[in-house]
Each structure stands twice: as structure tokens, then as C-alpha cells.
Image 1: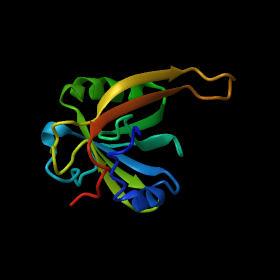
Image 2: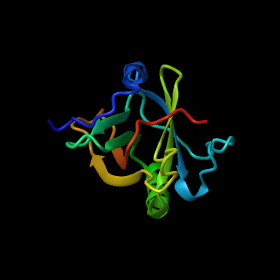
Image 3: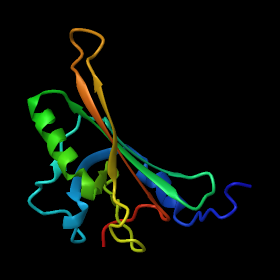
Length: 155
């Protein structure tokens, strides 16, 4: 029984947060996290509509939850500069503040138990040229972290 220790408290929230996907992503360098994202919006990232995805999945022993975030960005010089900046900041990791289409705000990469000890990190980068002349090239960033609890609303 691989999920014998799985805590399902909060599972009802998962069904609500999955309606409509992610409408905004703010990435805050974990060392600068002060409990909220900066109000000036300096950490917000634009992504192609309906192309940001967030998921939480339990590991095979049911003790850890893998938080994953992917954002698809239009390829080009501004995106290249943004990706270079993110890669330079990745050593300290990120706290992701996610605004869901349902209006709920979630925080990943920070928890009450561990603080920002286990932030989100870039784990992959995918470059796609497109398969037709009218299809724009994209860059997809993949972030991941592990925690013992589901993401929470900011306090």
C-alpha cells in the first residue's frame, strides 16, 4: 500500500484550484521572500494565455508532495533576457505566487514547516520552433520543489 501515510486533508481545495488554470505567476527569489510578493509587480511573468500549468502530486511513498510549475513564453530577445536572469537567480530558488483563474492565490516553494528551505528550482527548459510558418516559437520553463504539504494561500 504505497499511499498508506497519505494525508488527504485539504483535498477538497484541490478540485477548486484546478478550475480554469493559472492566470498569473509571480516568482520571488526565495532569499527575498517576506511573506508576500512585492506589490510593484516586478516579479510577475507574462506567459502565453492558457499555457501556465501547476500541479501537486504525491511521491510513491505518500510522504512528499512534488509541486511543479511550467510557463510557456513567446520566444524572442525579451524572453531570452528574462530566462538568463532567472537562471542567474536560480541558485537560491524561487517562491511562486500563483493566482488561479478561480481567484484563489497559492504559494509554492514556501511552507509553514520549512519556510523557504525547499524553494522551486528550474529543472528544465524546452525550446520549440513550431511546426508551421504561422506557429510562433516558444520557450517553456519547468520549475519543481518538494514539500510535505499542499500549497497554501499566503497569510
